[in-house]
Image (cartoon, rainbow, N blue to C red):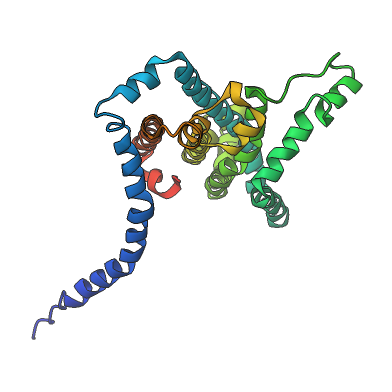
Length: 288
């Protein structure tokens, strides 16, 4: 009996070359409009006005810039924790509800994302101001005696950004929770686990990859957010993205702006590398 003829590897090589050819225009656009401008900005941070690391020394040695970096990390951390605490029950509810109601909640969530960012931010400005609905309602109920300062500070920034970032936590977390088998929780209850034990020992570990990917997305987006902090925070509570915009547009200090941009880039890449290390199986599938 004759041995079967081996298939030629030539068609496979042609398919791979064809796939790479289709990717070439997208990669060229990515390099041209993203990689090269970013590299140019980062190069300016060590070459203008003279070669050296003076911009980084100024960035980390000045109390003003250190406070901006602290504001950025603090607000991003608080917003991330708040979105996890608020988003987990929403994502779980969407996962266990009947399909009709789950789609309705998903539609509401997507509608909030599709609404113009400026419109949502200005709406929060109206709600949070001293004569706004929130202060007037709290005073009417007798909970406060005078209006609270909820805008032009980090409180307003945190509230507004939590609302805007919430869908970016709910969506990946809902995708994770929806794929869990409800029988796992029933089995835990059958074995005598309380609701808290079932959540802590069963549900939370299984949902952790979705929580991590959503929290990473929220934290990274919060680090570089500009519109909401600029409108709800004011100049006295500046964040890093606002500082970079001011350095470029008003002060024309491209070197210091490049140094601040590198700080954001390093933090982002470090967090992404940490997620891939902690969740190697899920990192490539869930991370944004």
